[in-house]
Length: 236
Ligand SMILES: [Zn+2]
Image (cartoon, rainbow, N blue to C red; front, side):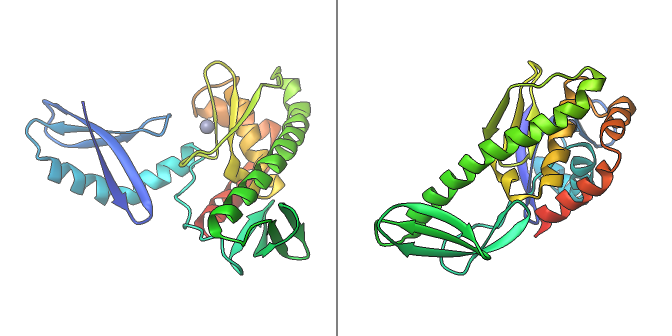
């Protein structure tokens, strides 16, 4: 099995490929989001890249349908006037110098105060730390809320981890741990709840079959709408 990656717009598509005695090339997206190509023997790697690229839109759609896919976000420079989000709202960044390091979210501004002359590295560090603190509180609160609903399906509150992940909003390990992307603190609470409920359902049903979606709709009847909003959020 070999590995390669193509870039389709802003999206990177890593994939594995192997050769088989088949006559045509087949591309599949697995439940863990990996993309697998089976190609006729001796297909040149360039040809495989080209085919994967041509299926870019289809792959993205599959990722979105089946998983909580987070596209690559535009890079941030952490300078004054830049837009940053928190719980679904947009704020202007204001970096200034002051007597102590702090971050305040007030009246449309995220004001980052540092003891040194503001620079983008320091601003980024302070803001990320602030996001992390708030993510710990908000995610825990939302998890507790979601678990109140999920408990009727025999789903118990799992241990929660927060990580920076580059391609997913959340994940659930086979050992029953739920992991949420730190980035999710930038989305609205209704979207955060969707991701949490999605992962809670995985504690009971691992793959995205009809059984999974039936369970999710029972616990969150408007999940489609929330999912749509989350995908739109990621497009900005
Ligand atoms: Zn899932």
